[in-house]
Image (cartoon, rainbow, N blue to C red; front, side, top):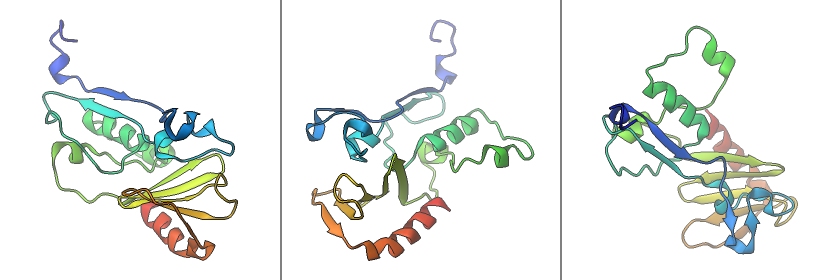
Length: 171
């Protein structure tokens, strides 16, 4: 790309499909390093580095909760592609372009992200993560605060509050 003079206008993306525990938490592998599967940060957080010299500021860090569905929408947005007619309904993706977040525009963004892997479920917010993980107790909810790390059990009755958070995150 550099040799052909196209590097300055090329959108380069480095990412992965999933996190990987290389001894973190005493485990090796991804979410299936445990049985049942887990949603530990080391197995669900992924790198995502975008470089687009003519369009994105260098070294900007985006702390917003984005996922690969959003990445798909971001690539379409960067390419200037607006799917015609009923194509968006056929794709049926919950993703939104986060290009405005990368360029520094102020835009409303989700404050919760839902995760699912096998029979494990979690809702991640900027304050922490609430997970239903059979790894800990079959019908328990585990609340994990990001700083400091203090797991505590939460009554299943809190599922009503969690369902409101899920619906708000998915809308």
